[in-house]
Image (cartoon, rainbow, N blue to C red; front, top):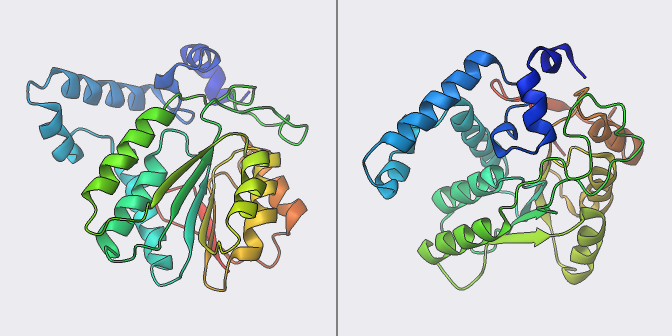
Length: 266
């Protein structure tokens, strides 16, 4: 366990209980927690309608949340002219997947063939392999990062689809289940699949390796391979999966200025 986690006992307790308030705070500090609490209080106490607050969300969300949205927007621009699906492995609460969906709706409203597909158990980590065991994250346990949001995300996806300029072809897809099972089956069921971006946020060795094995052969030159935890001691499995499946020496890795994620243009 890192010194940072030891310093804040309350954070460890929240993690052990899978408290949703902890789920996005692995790199938290007491000042950042105060910041998040104050924004939450502003949102809850504001007498205006939820609809109004959602429409003016930048005033009530943390800068880090806006940063994640902008990061996905920047990544999307890199593959706007690359045909194929956007695959996110590890959906969690849906912020990343829907950021890509918003980017597509805004920047390519007529591209009805852009599929945005998210894979997740929606029940937390199914298991922890020996390649993950040395990780420092308190989430590395069966059920870690559990966020029971599948139905909410499904309904949200439907609302966005209904509002699209062009309808008739579903764009946002949620694939629920163990990635080691659902990804090979998805490939079998979708023989024409081409992947423009593979965003790996599984955190773990086995699902990351499965995604690399099955999706990389379907990624054309110019497509984007994105890692959310590459090189992080908290989640060594992601790095080990890359080294095991395809190596790192031929990847020209880049990063965005304001996020930990890194990517390679293939």
